[in-house]
Length: 626
Image 1 (cartoon, one colour):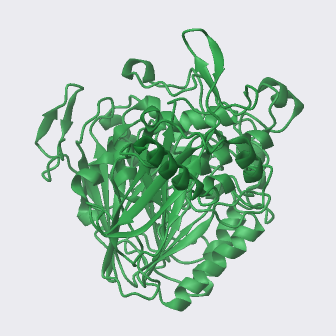
Image 2 (cartoon, helix red, strand yellow):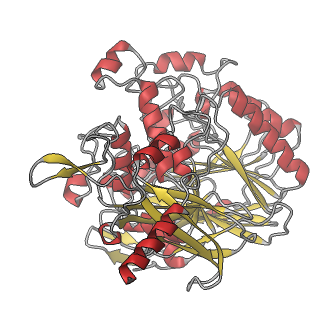
């Protein structure tokens, strides 16, 4: 009788579960059936009356939250009978395939979907539940679950957890936070800014340090969350035991799922997702190197590249990458057209409007593909060239104007590539000194942006950038069009903070010494009028602590990423005062720990730390140690 009762309860629970509330069945867009999944067919194929044994299911990759709104937030997990990812194109009589390694063949698994419950509460014990639900997941979406938690209060911390329906098989406990209402008076907010985490080049220590310090409210990721590279581009991954799977350059849906899954085994990345809501956007390597509207540096939609890359077109590869990204990231759907939109914005009270751009994959014109640099140099000023495409560009200018009109104190613009001019000819000695894969390769688009800011007197702009694997801090200026005084910052319309990589190597050499790196930084800083600080040496991240009166930017360097640790060095600190539209002078307080500071000094402290991988300078602020 007891077993019959349990069976009845299980059937009732499963029947009440929802397919559509798992957003990944509709990702990346309800308007793109070729990219999505027919729920009707999935429901017809799956047997909900024969549920999985909960003991055979595992929460394989922790939990995550993201894209916070005042009354809702996205929650994510993966619960699966296998750690491997779905092969997608392999089926056995309509059943989900599972590889039997002992007998070296695929065998049939149950057609039953996985029923997952979630609850959100205001306390860690999950006693004060504010939202809950039951959803299905299955191999069709790689056993991922993505739901929108609703009925939440603005700017409030919540705790959440998933469990297999009618069981004690639970996920880790997650923590998240909603944003304030757009018209709320907010005194301060803190963000951690990241980019460029390359798994085989080291441990993602930078992700874990704000968790250990509990120092921010939200995480902003500017892209290169994964890298598509294959064997030969793994750095010292073999010696570290960090080989990203599959062990080849990725192109298929399974490949991108598996690569994302590999990256999500890093414990510090898991911890960051578990403790902070993320606001991510992709760069190029989520698809492939130097991606643009019609191709990449390796794949240009020609017959030759189609054949070389295993018979897969660039368009199909891009769709595979996009679908896997939306399945695995705690990100909302936004209205998509044929170009796979990800650009969107967030209002954080009256304090901040955060505008997240896609300067890579959406609709940008041809970029520097290494073999065409001279050509891109010649056309870099053409008015028709755009990093964003006309639709996104018009939206961007409207967002800037509406933000100023509503009286938001600050405008933060998340742009994957560096906006400010970066002339590296003195260091590289090349005829084409600019990075034409960044905003400098789209000068008219850049000028239109600056013209909109200056003509409409829109100030308090903070551009954020990643991509370059180095740190750059500049006044935001329109050279040759508006007067600018580098010593005072007069004439600037804002500031750009561009951060280094989490692990991706320095562009001047993965094993560069501190002295050599600082020498190059000095040369580059001296060659660029608006560039106030530059550092090549450190991997790391930066935090922004924002109030109505000022923005404080704290840059942190990782002493080493070849072991998992909690060490970090505060290498530079900058202030932007409201209404001044420039870096406060003396820039960086006149002293930085590393790199080259215009009009200031680079001074390492006397304290040292022997990490077992060399002796490192340690700032007087000390290190956060696990």
